[in-house]
Length: 144
Image 1 (cartoon, rainbow, N blue to C red):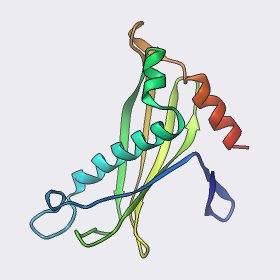
Image 2 (image 1 turned 90 degrees about the vertical axis):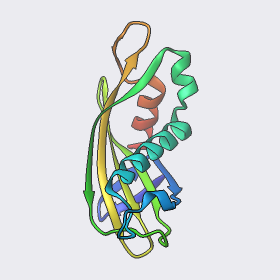
Image 3 (image 1 turned 180 degrees about the vertical axis):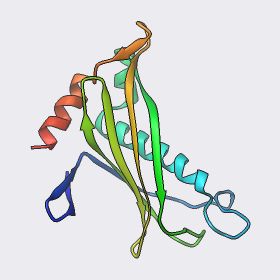
Image 4 (image 1 turned 45 degrees about the horizontal axis):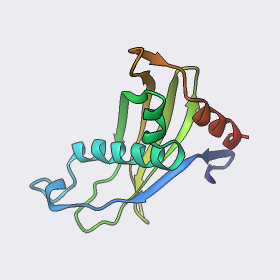
């Protein structure tokens, strides 16, 4: 699946899901707390994996994803009455690392953008693993 990001840039391998804002997500001013976006990014990353390379398949070959870095830029506040949608997509896959971009939007605003990067870890060998072939091939195909 590809979607237009800007004039000449395409987003590939997108995972998207609506986000429910709960009462415990807001602060005393009625605005979604900044830390909640980190949790939403984690939910989106898992939605991405469930859609493109499920955790059960990874565990069958003794690997697990590891998050190494999260960057967030807050752009516009969300309230409990907003209906946000979260999206994430893979932007880079190296020999043993990956990078994805994420965003939280409503119909009127981009509320938050961010990046996450990480690697995969071989549970039995107890060391960083190469990017799994199924994910690497999927990224290569979708990037063409």
